[in-house]
Length: 147
Image (cartoon, rainbow, N blue to C red):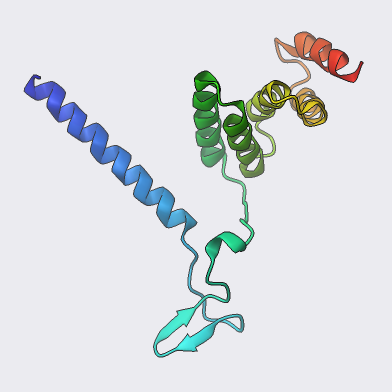
């Protein structure tokens, strides 16, 4: 392997590790100093030890939404429509106005035979992008799902 290619490989690995560390840091609960915390020595403990039990809070984050769509598209290409639907659903929570996320979610739900969810997602897509190039095609799909 040439030195240049090897260097690029190491750079790609370093970027992947950095991205993973940043994602992990986002998911880590923050320690707060308020009425909901317990004091043990100098350490403030969150009220719930299991971070998975605390509901995830979403705020408008179009970059995270776009990342979720990209990962969802990867899962769709691999044939895992269930995982893809989960990622697209996450994308819509980060940015409710992401029309691509709603369209992909509808397609994934349709593949998963979750027709009610697919109808709802197609309707939301058409609400956000009524003049899209594929709007007539989406309307036809929606009619088939209703019928």
